[in-house]
Amino acid sequence: MPRAASTSEPRAWLTLAGALSLALAGCGRAPPAERVEQLLVFGATAEIRLRDAEPGAAQAALAELSAQLNQRHREWHAWEPSDVTRINEAFAAGEAAEAPDSVIELVRIAQPLSVATGGLFDPAVGGLVAAWGFHTSSYPILTPVPDDDTLADWRENRPRITGVRIRGNQLQADNPRTQLDFAAMAEGVAARDVVATLARHGVHDALVNLGGDVTALVGDGAEPWRVALRDPFGGVLGTVELGNAESLFSSGDYNKFRYSAAGARQAHILDPRTGQPARGTASTVVLHPDPLLADIAASALFVAGPAGFADLARQLGLGCALMVTDENELLVTVAMKARVTLARDPVPLGPPLDLGPDCSAPPAR
Image (cartoon, rainbow, N blue to C red; front, side):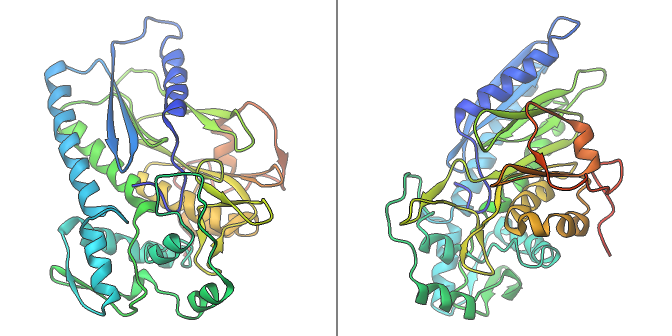
């Protein structure tokens, strides 16, 4: 499922991140035996790197993951026939719809997180994503942009995920414009499930790369994994070493976008408040122990923009976060600055934001 509110990476970028992780593992000692598997998940390539895994356990884990993630694809896809598209059709008709447990759980998880982000993250905006032409796997997008009347109607009658009611195994929306699109959280939820499945099969040293967003497992005494950060202006922005149970998620304007009539790049990351593509941000990166929070936060920070970076990072307890603006300025937290090795130096936009020494800071009350 291509992401509607944060950016996935193509396969070439996965290879770069993997090469860097291999280089680190080889420092000072022979690299451990490594196995690389690729799966097609949510319309993108998922790569799982296993170090020193027992072959039988690895094979069993990968078989379970393949079935599990493809089932989620059939349940969650935002525009190909799926449980979500069936539910959206019912919402548009003003009707309730039966939903699989996984979709009900997504709604349950999303509602308080949407509130925590002030609505900057909201999976009820699928209709807006479609109106901008981003429900597609084909780029560049050549469809016309939504007209002013369409966007004005959106702002006046904006649907919200908090207006979706859960009644047993059914969902019902209070606004017929509600169209579910879980792309801004799907990979975070999937990463949680992948890690749990690997651990259940006794696999404790792995790098899980879902469309460019990564979660690391590091076994006892093993080297950390090193991954690359894409520079929104081209090349590599820097590298980060990931320890056990750490996730690195990013959003950016460099992969899925369209051009305005004037030739300006318009990111596929939409601002629910305005109905327009988010402006002012080129990329965001969040490092956190919880891949779901990292996924949602990277998207919400992108929408918040430079003016909202500090408040939202504080609100969500993001000890490790950074933003590169579309003017090549850098906002970063103290803890993230300590973790990132930058390959170049964007212009600092103020001093680093001090939310404590750890990547998981206490959220604002």
